[in-house]
Length: 446
Image 1 (tube, rainbow, N blue to C red):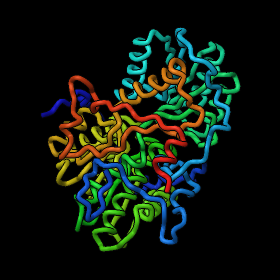
Image 2: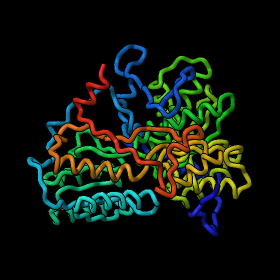
Image 3: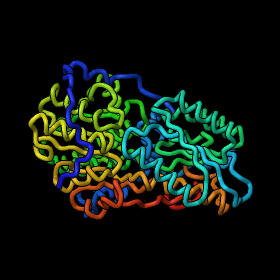
Image 4: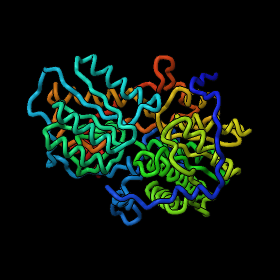
């Protein structure tokens, strides 16, 4: 069935020459249901990344300096964050809470639903919510934080436009006595954020990439990478996760006994090539990736433009690695408009959102897979946490830096389990589990 409510009636696209693809190159930012080839597990299961390399020491992937593009890969244990002051309340309260929300954008249904779901859950508790829209601007978001400080809100929810800038904003709020909870992207572990409620960008993409790796067994892969925003932690870690998983699958198919962590490093090296030159290739595993020019800004129009540019300049592309579902829907429309058959001539995978239109395309065989990440699960998850802290007295002083939704690949075999339209525009919501660092370490440490 087709319920493409967001299809565009007309759109004039200016086609770019292939030379423009090198626009992806930039300096490397600094900062901050996985089955094996022989396993009977499905891509629904959480990836077991393990912790050791060949030497038995902590694997390089867990100490790699470029954490921006590895967001979501968690080490076996975390160091305590309890010593970082976070301005958490000392006592419970039954007063009407005032909450400030600075959200990146309202340019897609996902961002709209994040804001709407937070408002719904606040209204249900009788709390006041002030939502401000940053429009992808760190400067505007900084002004939002100052506004919330002046208002004297009880807690700030921040959807970072830039993770480095957000770290300073959070510190400013905490210094003013206001705790902050993140949405959508994790901040550095030494930041004063309580935690960030989010989908796991890397592991979502990794699990989706495993589906693509299975599909393309025995075939060369010529992929186009489409970033919502190059330099964004969520965007880069999603494309990175795709590449790491595909390389892992292809290594297994070639009989090479490498660990998932080894494959993740290979994927990271490809991402670094993309940043520098706009393209990357792993000749051993017959896997080539070219980057689209410019940012698609997580929108359907951006995805359409990026895909048409990609296919025009790179006509033998057979796989599109897409940041999230709105871009994927736009990319699919471009594929069809250019005379290709999605799901046959060109496969499309997406890492995030589990948007109902993308799920319908999976049912139709036009999109191969997407990652789990319904907006309402983020909204409910963050407001539940506020309630636990302020009303129930939950000790959130030493939480894991990110509170993740389950990283699940949604594909042909399980899509019907998650599809719930018209009840929701996204997959059925599963609220994340909140973990302190001692709880995480006890569950994951050796």
